Figure 1: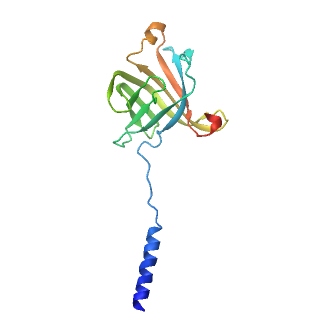
Figure 2: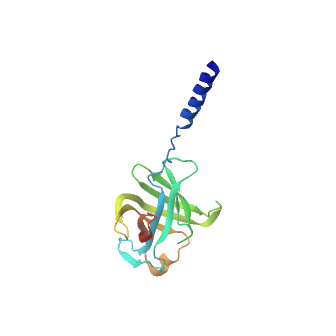
Figure 3: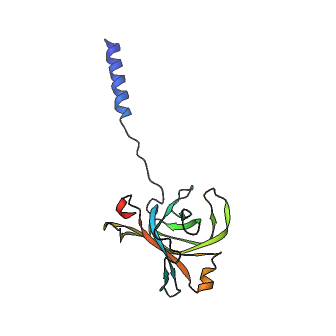
Length: 175
């Protein structure tokens, strides 16, 4: 009888401990991370628009995410090979929701360096700062970017590109 009671207690203990769920934590840059539907505009130095969507790309996805170091002070900014084929490590402030890069060397997805540098200025995430095409509120992203191999800025006289948009919602009406 003692064996049956002891066995019952052991089985009950196994069932009770197996029901506990491990808490899964986020990354250090969780507040900055996401997929974003964005557009690109060419901008003059005074902040006026030189040309909306100068390459006719329309909306496309970019991504911001943590680095392998998983620290609050750096993120990857990746255009997912949709615009200028850049992926750079940017300095970040996860509390202020800001990021920037000064002549950061771009890398392809395989981690090899390519022959351009990218500068990102005034990068920020604005919580609830956008309205999606379906009319729902979403977080917003905006930053200014320049590329070392860009001859358009000198040939046509504008200063930088502004990339701006909203957090990807997964809803068909927002794509």
